[in-house]
Length: 226
Image 1 (cartoon, rainbow, N blue to C red):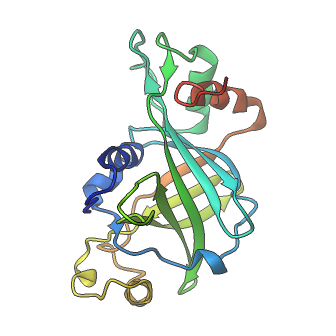
Image 2 (image 1 turned 90 degrees about the horizontal axis):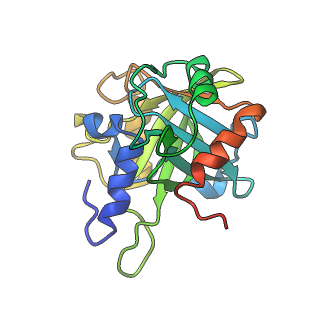
Image 3 (image 1 turned 120 degrees about the horizontal axis):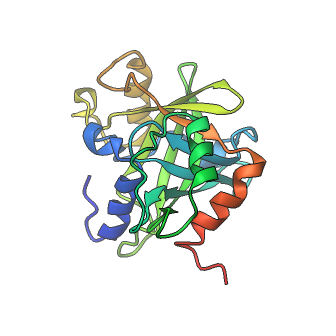
């Protein structure tokens, strides 16, 4: 990953919200799929919680148009005056317990950063993939990022999404021309490769309507809504 002249703080925030990417180097030098030819899945639109990896976060998939989402991520963090060590956020039920017992603020749950993406989906070799394009990384002359996050995904049920990180640093990509089509061809041929696609998923759990007020309050810690 080479942010170049772009915002280093934006890159740091992106990695902070998806920490597993640091270990797998799951950044791609090109996007997968064409956002102009994609179609969003309305069943994905909404607010989701990423749980079970030790660095939990909330993600809002807001339809930008019929093809793409505006995706906003906010981490779930411990306030300066709180001790949340008793909580092990592995399931949605664990998150509900946290929201019920702890306030939003320094004495409970807080958030100090956020990141935005443009997100879209595409189908390759019978599998669904999602591309997350970081926004707010400003370079000289254009607004294109230097990297994209690519994830294979499945939906085992209406309220769960499994995300499998695509390792852009895998050997099969070493000598590939840095174009979308070239990377798509290689990815399509390596759908079963453990070196290319992670075996263990990151899981998103849909937030139910009665818990959305918690999300709004948490987001207000990093977004001025006055």
